[in-house]
Image 1 (tube, rainbow, N blue to C red):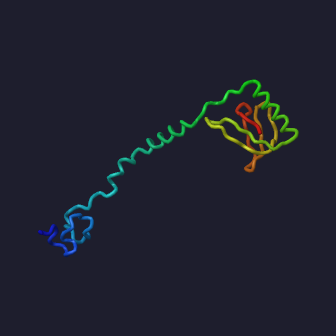
Image 2: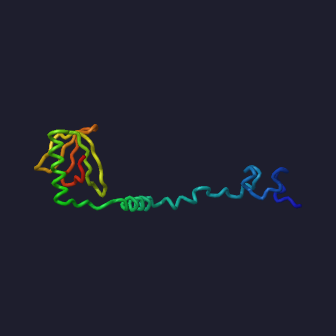
Length: 136
C-alpha cells in the first residue's frame, strides 16, 4: 500500500485526517483555516436575538383583569378590615402584563392619589389601588 504522507514519521504515514498529524509535519504553505471565526457573522445582529426574546416574553403577558362591582366592594371591605385589625397584608396587583405580589404592613391608604403605602423588608413601596386584584 502506498503511503498517503510519505514525508512524515511512520506513525502518521497512513493517516488521512490532517488534524491528527502534528502541525510541524504538515506543509507550512497550507493555510491553517479560520477556525471559529466562520461563525462570527451570525453574531452580528444581537438586536435580532433581543427582539426574539422579547416576543417570547410578551406571549406570557395577560390583559388586565376587569373586576365587577361586587369584587371591588369586597376588596375595599377587606382593605378597611386589614387597616384597623390586622395590618399584615398580601396584595396581588397587575403591572405590565403580569400579576405580581407584595407582602408587608399597611402604612397608609392615600385616597387622593389612590395609592396603598406598604412597609416591606426592602422599605416603603406604593401600589396603585386601581391595579389591586386580590388582598389576603
